[in-house]
Length: 363
Image (cartoon, rainbow, N blue to C red; front, side, top):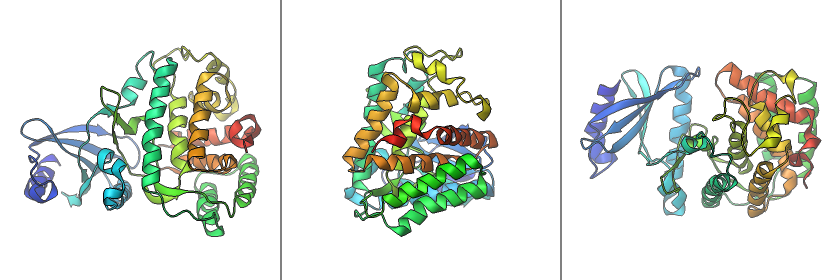
């Protein structure tokens, strides 16, 4: 796959990236294991500098994600000078072509390493100041991005109610499953969503997977890139991106600690046995600690979300609508069946005890 794609890039390079050295060689940087698997290739120029990043579909199943990412990136880069957060930290789409029978998406490279590299280092998540710096970095870019890509503010109307709430619930029921827990939860979610009708809820471009692994950070701690836009959308409710970062950050606090005991987070331990009937997914403890627990970290999560809502002038009561919908959308994502079951377990945990968290009761 590398030779024909390299030849195509070299032939078109003067038009794709004028004045920049053309790709000369490439390495395979990663292969994911999901049913919609893709291969990621990193191209370098003759001097060994990054030239381009390519994602290649391994089957027809993985092609829609590449098409969606290309559409999202093309839209964002069409905004021109109105979105500095895009020009500085979002990869530019270069081409979407079928090469040697496989669909390939090629984008410009961005410097930095994933935030997860430091996050998974022992001691990182135990330090309150270090964690706060990660959240500040994520919040600062996301607020700028949402401000710059915002659509004109309109009152929340019945059409949005059906698209943002009703359709998600219908898709979840058809594709994921249904039980008395979901019935009760989503009936109340719909009631609370109807109470928001007429209120202005901001919409903006959506990343769709705004977690630590997709944020590139340089050695000085500056955010250099936001990658992997396969779940990107031109517009949607801003809250969906707000929840992804803190949820992901809280789930995997124990990655650097095989014992499951995470320094600096004593309250996390009691959530390891909170929902045994929901399966053996270890990270459910992180979910419970993040949104139901006590201590500086759950407070950091609450501050991140509430301050973001306040900056957007979103009523806190919207959490009770859009957080369950966020969990439902996570369960709807294509991927390994175990991943879907884990995401459904989070929604069940929330649905069994919604009043135990400020997300349900605030506002």
